Length: 484
Picture 1 (cartoon, rainbow, N blue to C red):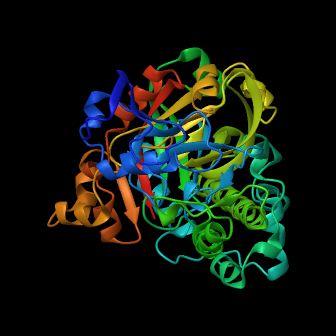
Picture 2: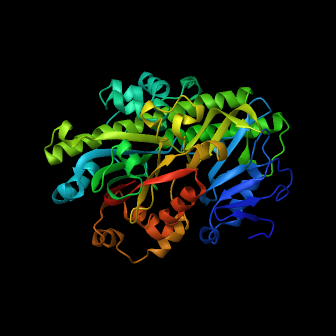
Picture 3: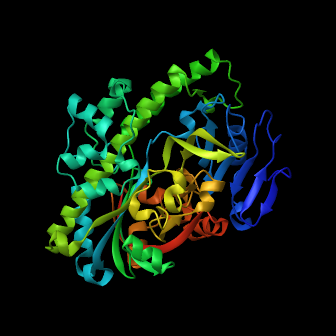
């Protein structure tokens, strides 16, 4: 790694102004010396490149799950001042708009479901389509699609896919205002009309987990969590619809860069000033895709509950499957923060990073009342063979990272490398030997998603906790996995 990079403390390094030309702020990467050994030079350059964008304030940041992405590094956080020529960049959101995670708690324990675990996983695999190009039971008409794009989770709940309480426990109540269906291309609509209620492929998953360790008893109690408890984590996004929105607007933004005379070190950072026609059109489309993603996860939540009822022959009251929280980790949102002693209106890009609002929401009214004393749940999934974590956001995060934390473990290997590494192995059997039953749409997906392909999520979470931007609440272990 370049000698220009300076370690600030045990959990942060600085990428100084001048690392690449025209940086307006430094880069800050949250990483300890152990994880730093796997830090890609290209990812550091991407952090530095992001620091050249017009209107960026404080620093171009990256979380300990950092790895190379499109334009921005995955794990990147960047906030631009809306009123100081700040720009909007689709590369700072990513292709899978509002890829996110939700966690469901139950009244059950691991031992209680053990006899029916394989039946449960098989039922979930049947009920929730997964894999490349998978289609679901919902076929959206054009008018339905417009309503989903505007209403998000509310559309799903109004059709009987869940409860009003689910909306209260979803970031932004599962709906960003300002979405405009007219900004969605026919191709994006066509790609999304049959994919609502589906996992998709790659690293998307549905996991039956249990609370392996309670690390903060008071906060765990506030979140409704206890030792040995069965939970379900769902990780998915806006599917082909969101991917197409990003694809469509990258073309628009590449033209905008020339139109507004913006100098960029990397064309993948294509952007436009916040108040420009191009940026406003993109944000309206991005919000529509985000709302689609929330509706997608909400539908899968409903079918997850139904699968548990069917297999366990249990009532809703006995199951007690309630949504703890749902967080987005590929999104750009308008938020206000104090920067250099002045409250400023920012467009905060989180690309492979999750919101981590602290107690009282740091002055942001969006945080539900139930989390006002604890900070919001921060959901950090790991790989399918190790663990995941629930943390709580902190006041430190509000001051240090625009209320942001990491979103997962972060890849160590490309998918091709993982496939080569796992050649000749029976991954499903290896996992079953660990007590983890897995179903997948294909063997290649399991090969791509082997544990070795990822950083150890415990090491990543340790950095976030030590930095004070989120505090550990519980560790979760998987017992049943449906892979995309």
